[in-house]
Length: 168
Length: 103
Image: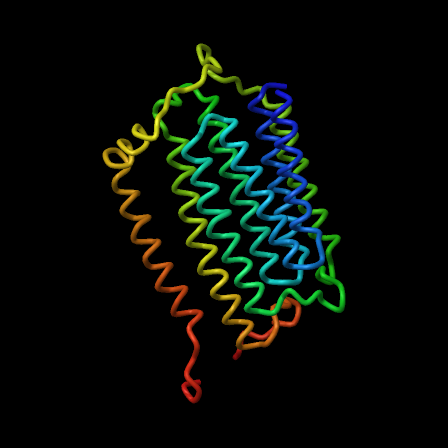
């Protein structure tokens, strides 16, 4: 556990907590961006440069902007008059706490060991290697993802398209 | 504590935060934000196992994470499109107020 990991973990968790707890939805979206940035930095700390920069481009550049657009289009920036939480928030909190307890217990008490010979040496993986793997071994998943993205794009446009008056 | 378990704990905490948000918030967009946080926590696990696993040069975990990011982006686009359409239809994004399946 290095010092950098503590800082990045604190930043990410604080961003996540703020995204979940804040009352104003626009503030939530901004906190979500902080959490995404912290995650991208964690990826970079793990020597996964490509995944880190992809995280910045896709999540901060696209998903966060999309969330802000949705908030503004649905006038969600108005702080709700009543409670921001559902009528039984305690149940959700208990479920989440139980999940964290189980996951944390499993991580800390796991007897599984990494195979011997695994060093923590920095893996020498370049973006060119990733591109080669994408075009050779992983070319079928790549094509499927391309199809999925096209379908999602068309589907999202159709779902969100204005209905003509009288067509209902 | 090994570095790997440190990352796994951060991911578990982030997953629990996202789950709590998805289960307790009333605004549909904030529920989607919670789901995004959970997906990202899973990605952090994948990258951490890739980094500390025996064969990082095989790129398996990295590829899984990259495809997972792409699928999460598609999910976000469709989910937010649905939220916008629900708001247009019901004039609210309050999930407690949307209690009819019949339009």
